[in-house]
View 1 (cartoon, rainbow, N blue to C red):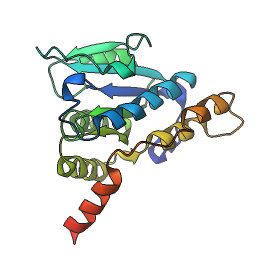
View 2 (view 1 turned 30 degrees about the vertical axis):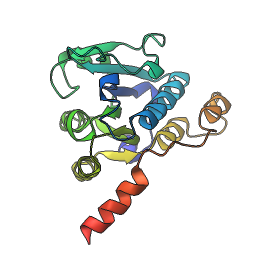
View 3 (view 1 turned 45 degrees about the vertical axis):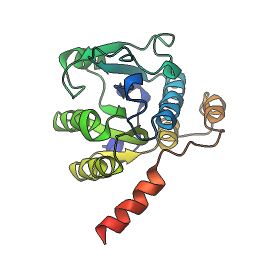
View 4 (view 1 turned 90 degrees about the vertical axis):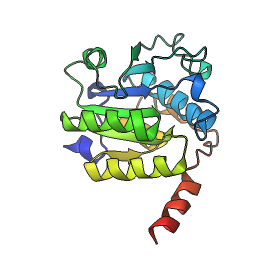
Length: 204
C-alpha cells in the first residue's frame, strides 16, 4: 500500500526504460533533456540496487538503437526488442520477475508506448510511477493529456529526483552522497513548465 503513495522498496521495484531510440531524437520534444534525466535515473537506481530493463521498438531505421548517451550496452542493461507498443510483453514480464510490485516508467512516447505500458501494468496489479521529466512525446498536447489520463487511472506522476529520494528515504542511506552528486547539476528543462501553462490555458 505504501508504494501506492510513493514510498518504494528498491528490492520490489524495477525501472523500465521505454524505446529511447536515436531515431526519435529530432521528432520528440526535448529528447536530449529527457535522455539526461533517464541517464540520471539509471545511474541512481543502479546504486540503490534497483533492476533496469529497456526496450527498443523494432525498426528498419539505421538509428533504431537506444540513444548513445544512455550507454545501455556498457551498463549491461538488458534490451528487449518488441513490436507491440506496450512493454507488457512476455519477455519483459519474465525479466521483471515475480518479486517486483512497483514499476518506475520512463521513455517515449508518453501518449503511446509509455501510456499503454502504464495501463497494462496497472490493470495487472502493479503500482506504477511515471517519471514525467524522463518521458516525452512529439507534441505537448499528447504529452499533457496522456499524463492526465494516467493519473486518473491511478498512476503516480513523479520526477526523476523525487522518485530517487523516495527510494532512499533517509540521508543516512549508504549511497546518499553518491546519489546526491548525480543530481547536483541543474536539472534540464524538459518542457514541463510550458506544458503546464498550456494546460492551464486550455482548461479555462
